[in-house]
Image (tube, rainbow, N blue to C red):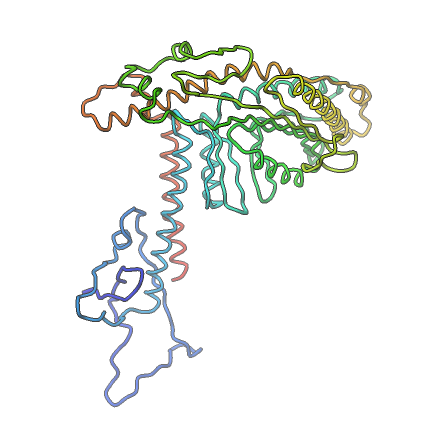
Length: 491
């Protein structure tokens, strides 16, 4: 028979097979001394049996009965060893903590695997370093690699998924940096350095860890190798500029040799929202009326004017804006002669800011200043190449490398051109996401609705989904093991 214990945790603790209070002999005062030499009561914490993590109530999850008190009767006195009480309560806490760990990972994986999607970035709070490492290892194996930004101080994880608009800008700039890298490499005699324009290099700044869009890395071939990061590029589409500046301040402290930071901020104001229920767009394009999903060509054929193919003008279909870029801001920072980059500087010799879009005379003049500052940063990158060559071989001939001159290695017009067509793809992706979400809502309320092969494919398991299922299972097993180990350590 299990007795109850008055507690705000509700569950009743297991009764021990042996009572911890033997009735004293008559006429004798019970001894309060312990058998231990210290004179203190000996407390033994029993190791609870490992229970599977479930969403059931605490009593069911742990096998501990939760019978309420009998009406009109006070609760029975405690007949358990104090150590057993502590052990059971500890196990309850560990189970709930482990359950929270799994829930946090599941939320991140659900966002990563969402397809099609309307939102490309999301911030998750209270993510532990253990959870972050689990997610990081799984994300490295996914086909559509998410970019992760983790703050070890505030336990925040920001996940950014690839998008056409974001990637179109990054690709143009990265190809330009790769051409600069090749030009400088061709001026070096011998294999003195190793260089790479990296699209997915994780930078650890101590308190924060993130993956920039593009990092230029120059490594001297000496023993041990010495790595330098002369330039960094970051494009923000679904992120805020304030978040980027905070990351830049951290990365400059960790990598004071940085010669140039290039930031491109693509603003969509107002932010995208799916069509409201019962609106004109909702009635015109919803599955029941349209009958089928429009292909990208069919969707864009319904686009309202203006239909510019040279500028990223809004994509409006069915009187609804599916993708609108309001403006594009570009800023570049370079380091001083003897000082690292200062993100907060207003010195026009060390930073320049311009508006790439909308295109007008004033914005064109500001972009000329940005172009000159980028060329200054490329000259500092060249100096980094020279320094690294000398580290590898002090007698290396670097005269040709020192004399190298640069022009802007890409065209701003190519950035705008790429954005124009990326907006078309983004608009159609958002339409598809809205369409399938609405269709799924109809399917759940209708019995016997047949679905096409294309629609069924959206819900079918992908390699990424199967991978995440396996990761979840392994994570759950590790969490259970850790909970059991931590519980038994008190025994």
